[in-house]
Image 1 (spheres, rainbow over the protein chains, first blue to last red):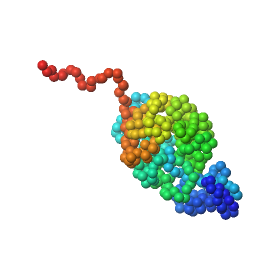
Image 2: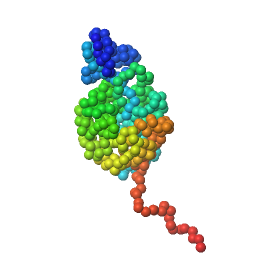
Image 3: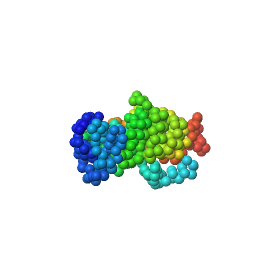
Image 4: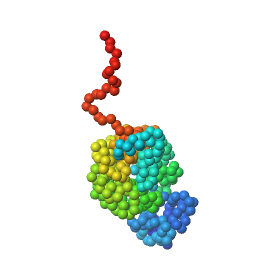
Length: 78
Length: 273
């Protein structure tokens, strides 16, 4: 199925969760609570169709066809 | 500030004792808040931040890019610098609230530097959207550091809405024009009961010293350091400037006079015939 990630359309496996996607994009392993498995801070957040998905719900949130996902992090600014 | 507290504070500072800035129950030894925009490299930025002695630093929230090397967030964590996410680039209260929510989730802090700008040309705060966003964010439990115009009326409005700190601009972002309306900054300080942080427009160290002499509790700047010829040295200059300005404010400057006033006594001069 297809979703839009940060403005770019891309294919993901059917039934993939937000955790799967974040792990794929960041290259970090994630625990079920949405924290990085290596114990370091992950420093990213996810909005799905303009609603923030708390990291505790990443695992239980399945992506759906046409979802618009924003994955953001801290960059230089201000 | 009463004369007694000023004396006590000056004495304490003179003796090298702590004079921390307390925001939301957090003690910050350094009254220099740094931004991170404009630095050409993460390494260079790290050196400048360390030289400045800052303990609180702003970041922007943007789309994650796998191509990005190094993590700014990790750099701040490694150096024990508290992170202050901003809502830079937001033109509406809706976007600012959304960005703040994402920042809280990503960086695990409810502090946010609220920036709602009117247009890209001036980068000046949009007062109407700013007030709206402040109210919404306070209701959602955020600690709002409101970047505002140097307008004493608006600053008080933001405080009354529950802003944790008000941050009036000295001049527009990135201009380095310094503090264009010192009188307004003094007015804001005199009426505020939350910390006042001079934010934006700082060009060089003396601007930061002036902000502190006007009574500001802290200074926030980025470009003046990150785009200086030598960022770490400029960072160090600002560290001293903020301390110097704070001390001068506490010490109490002499009044301005119209005519000269000799500091040497006239009596007892030798006479030459």
